[in-house]
Image 1 (cartoon, rainbow, N blue to C red):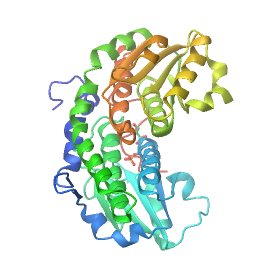
Image 2: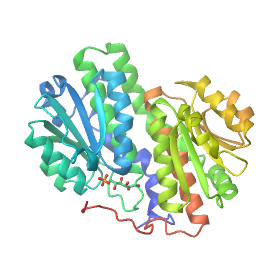
Image 3: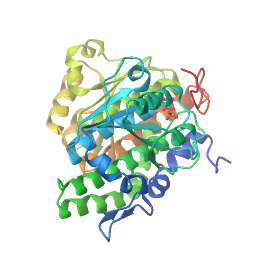
Image 4: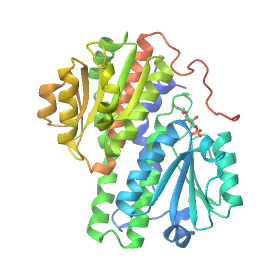
Length: 366
Ligand code: F6R
């Protein structure tokens, strides 16, 4: 059942090239230059005329929502707010029938997300679901939606659900960008062609596994860990930290890299590993100066960089390379080594990787 892997989590990490392919199969038609998604096609007007998109989710799905905020605003120029479902539902939010709510949920059973959907529907908003589990409560409650098609995710720590959620949301954003006319045909094509390369590039990113295992050995006894990223990779930093804390029980925090100087920098000493996402696009130079600040305080730097990087290599204690891609697609690759890092550290610490203490795969109570 684990297909030769020691744990479901590792199996599911390795399934990502396939899962992402399954997510866009039949939807992304690069040669014809179209994206076909029934749930979007049938509700195009509602989506295009939305005043704003409100994304609600919990946990890892909320992190996918944060990535989607960057994607929708940057590519489709639609204002987006991302909310924890639990906060949204109880704070008397301002919602109108001009709003579109996107709910993201792997299980489709998360109680807070479901309640947020019901609230938004009452206020007249159009509700779109991004779920993995077919026929789940959230899939049934939403007005329309798109499944991730990641296949069953058994490991409690979400992995392939995250990358396939981002894939679905990217497809939607690209489609809206095209329909709105904010994307030229050339640019649209460039994205479609690059998206088709992603499974192979994820495969490449997975080749970092042996190196990541060596790095895990070095830091497995740490008591704290900081994750930093900017722009599209800020949510990836949050997700990296969540993965580490939930399965290895090491305290970890994710931060936008520039926020470090507003507090967390005080934590840095020679015992603090800092995972920094420093891909070559999007604020690269700024991230490099953040790395210098960590280094001068003797923090240990584990950097995720683009293949062929020179500058960070000279500063960091460890560098993990991922293939080059469009900036907005980097989260699909930068996430991979962070998943592997938390996996190996948890295994080395003797933790129950697939069923971490106190956690359940679906959170059906608030
Ligand atoms: C983290 C994790 C949780 C879920 C969260 C939402 O690895 O699995 O944080 O992401 O409970 O679950 P879904 O996506 O099923 O609504």
